[in-house]
Length: 457
Image (cartoon, rainbow, N blue to C red; front, side):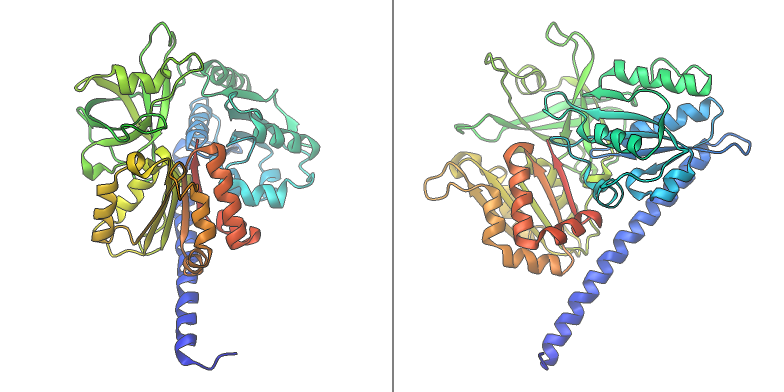
C-alpha cells in the first residue's frame, strides 16, 4: 500500500469525480421522472379510477412518443393513464399496476434497447409472479433484420410465462407501418369503449429549405457521403445533441404512400440550421436508394422538405463537466459532431473522438473542422483509422484495443461513452472491444447507469 500523499490525493479526486457523475445521472433521472409524472397528471381525467400504466422501452425515442400518444388516447376516452420507462419499473410495481400497455422497440438483431439492460438482467432471466396482471404489447421492429421484433417477442413470451394475461394478440409494427399502428388504436378503442381518432399520427412535419449540399468524399472507394444543411421556414425549432430528424419523403411511383427516413442531427439550434451526413445508397439493381437518392440527387438547393426533430433521450450526452468518449464510423460522425459542438466554448470535461472510415485521402470527413476543434479545445483528443489504406487497414474498434489503458483511465475518471454508426460490423466490434478493455461487468454497469449509449443503424 502506497504512503505517497500525492497518490492518495489523486485517488480521492478520482473517487470524487466518479461520485459526482453518479449523482448527476441520478439527478437527471429524477428530473425526468418528475417531468413525466407532471405530464401524466395533466392527462388524468377527474375521478379516482385506477390508472392504466403505459410503459415504453425506447432506443431512438419513437416508442416513448407512441407511449404518450397511447396515454393521450386513453385520457381522451376518460381513462386515467400514467407513463413510465419500462426499465425504471420493478416487478412489484409492474404487478401492482394490474393493467399495463407496453410499447417496446427492438434494436439491432433482436436486442433490447440499451436502457433496458438492467430490467432484462434482473427481471427477465426467469419467469416472475405476475398473475393478475393484464397487458397489451405494441412491438416495434424492422423486417430487414432477421430477428424482427425480437425483443418485443421475448418480452411477450416472458410475460406469458410469468402468468400475465394478454388483453389481445401482440401488435407488431414494421418500420413505422401506419396500418399496424391503426390496429393498436383499434385495440385501445375496444378497451375504452371509445373510438380512437383515425389519423393518430406523429406531429406534423415543419417546413424546411435545403440551403447547402457538399460532397464530402469525392473519389472514395465507398459510397458518396454528403453534408446537407436545411434552414427552418416560419418556426424556431429547439433540440439538443443526440436528437433525431425525421424527413418526409415525396409520394412518387416508387414511393406511392407517405413515408419518412431518420437521420442523426449533426448541428445545434445555435447554428441556425439542421445538418446531416447522408450516404448515397444503392438498391441491388444499381438504382439509387429511395431516400438517399432523392436527398442527394433530386432535391435542388432552395427546395422545401417536411421535417420534424424528435427527442432521442437514449443518446443525449452527459453534463458538460463529464469526460466524454465519442466512437463512430462513416456517417455516424454526424451523431457525434453535435456532442462536441455542444461543448465548444464551455468549461467542460475532456472530449475524445475515435473515428474510422475507408481512406485518409478521400474519407477524412470534416478534417478542417476537426483540426479546429482540437485547436480550440472542443476536442481534447482525436484518433482515426482508415481501413483501405496500406499500412493501416484497421477499423475503429482497433483503436479501443490500442488505447485500452487510456480509455480505462478516462472511464475511471467518470467518462461517458457514446457510439454512433453502422449496426453491421462496427457496433458489434466496438462493443466487444469495450468489453475486452473494460470488462463485461464494467461495461454492463456503464450501460445501466447511462454512461454507455449507442445510436446505431
